[in-house]
Length: 137
Image (cartoon, rainbow, N blue to C red; front, side, top):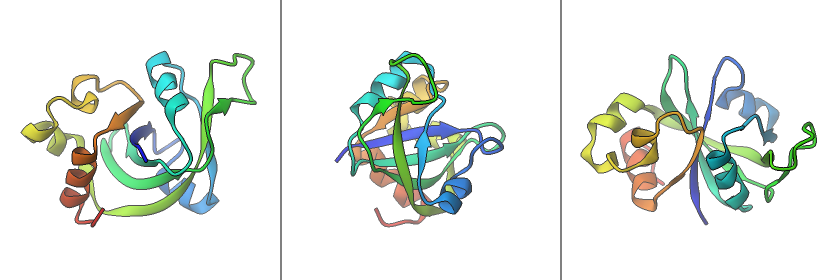
């Protein structure tokens, strides 16, 4: 199982929207580095949902439930998507500010390449985010 982080603008699509739907397609990614990461996702992988914009925090966890496939709404087969379902909200959102202030995260792409919308999460970072949020991983 691999761990990921995917960003979304909560005004467009929030973690609460995913909870309401129960399952949805993770789409809209155009950056080819982020698309390469989506292409590596497998069913069962876990994904932090990060609210960008004003919120700038990790708010929930989802599960990848499909392998990557070409987005049926697009003509370009390089634009891949996965289906995800919500697992749980974090007890307390973990903000980007907290992450940037913690030396344990200094090499993470979230800190180094903050505009990247999808990225891997190491197992130690996965556990530490859960600890900071008050959730057991």
